Length: 294
Image 1 (cartoon, rainbow, N blue to C red):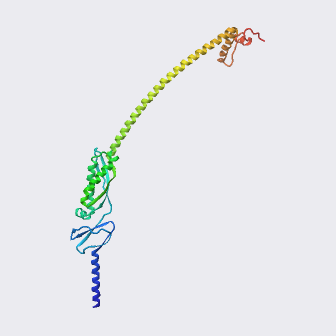
Image 2: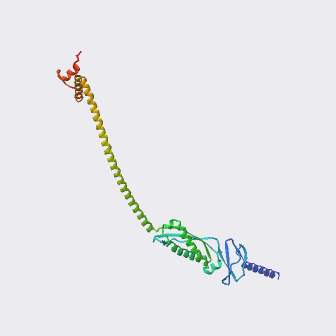
Image 3: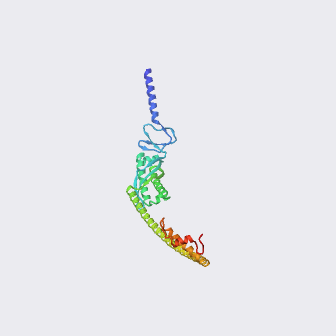
């Protein structure tokens, strides 16, 4: 009898323990719970972390992480306002703001990410289709992404999602477009280089012509000046010679003869044969006219 009583007490304790486990649950920080009663979602309950209670058997719970989450999109190609193609990647920061609406509209987080990615892609294509590629390199890029964020945030509200941020993670030109742009840039730089070379050659020819003209003028002036100086020097030399000749014609004639002999001997061979009655020997032996040899 006693064993039967103990068994009943143990069974009741186990049943109470199991019942309490079905009635109690723990809510962690950064979580929200949605109570689903008989398949019908109810309003969210107290969301403060700690131990919570629910009706056993008829209530089930759906937990949602309400912390800030990030959705990274796959690379996609968009057409800009100037018909340029751009391969972009975006990331979106969002959080589940209304668990009840979230459950009623999309149920699972995976489905929510799919729909949110579609909203971002649609809005991004629409907004980037209005701007040029140069605008994405300026402050207008921030304005375009702000428009995308506002549009996505407004369309995500019925899903129970609050979008905090939409940013452009990467934007690259497609390989074919990049190669075409590179070819055009290369051709433009080559054309510019040819123009600069042609302009440099033209400047070089102008500088060379100016230098040649200046050289000709300088040489002409120098030759003219040297001719004047040489003429003045020759006139002065002739005047001195005339004065010297007037003072002593005989000595001047003798001096000029010695100059002639000197020029003759300078061009002669090492050995010079002269006859004894040579005028050169007499001039060297007798000295100036009017002088008596010792």
